[in-house]
Length: 324
Image (cartoon, rainbow, N blue to C red; front, side, top):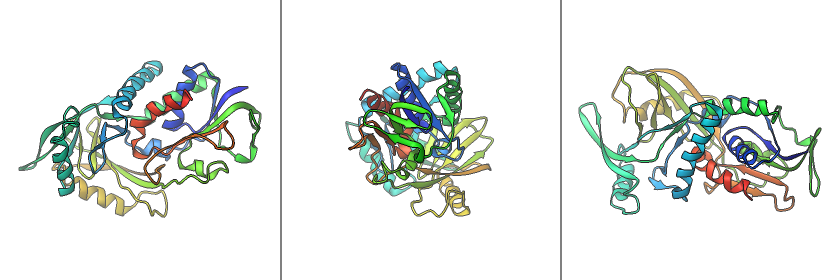
């Protein structure tokens, strides 16, 4: 008899199950490993300030410090390194971005989080801001290490969830030969495909990302319309596209060309493209995640829809949800 069945071991399922196990709950994670899922494709950037409007994320005073604490804690548990604090530079490569960065520099509520920054691009300098408390999470390293940890605990089953085998009682859950008190769906936008949460207003977006190699190295994340993320050994992730009306989840030449064009606005160095990936983000209309329990079945929950802000938001909200 388990306290919780967790469906999915992306970033959401990983961090929620970690909190529950830490509370002494008996947990089983059911997951169909897919290296093309959004957690494996995502760059994992975390920052108190995001978006084209250069705005603070909600509850950033609690969200970002807790993310730093939790990721270091899980690193120690897993004896693995995947949490990297780095300066995050937002460059004024477009008039719209310049408008918002200048407004934030003049706003007293932002001045403790940002400083003016000038970036040399060829023969010219591009102004912008440097955002503090930011960095990136190497999500694949984290997920693989945590899956091994769950396996060692006997808390992991590799299988594709099939709702036909799920029976929900008033105070218990049965799935095949597994009995539990509660079940939580942490399987991204696939949560909409089950009968409990097919009413949720997911708005998935496709994101494409390329990985490049160049001779010059750097230690800051540079961002204009796209980000240039150093991941070591002269390798960099460049992303990402945001496509709502996509036809498939495969990389496209159009996406590649767009990334290359936008990269030229922040990088004036030769490079080679060594990889090109695509994934589907679990974004929502309204840009708010879905967190909570079913209105009729209070032992069936959902924890999903964090989109591109997952690395920043999930630790804090997983803690709140696990305490509920």
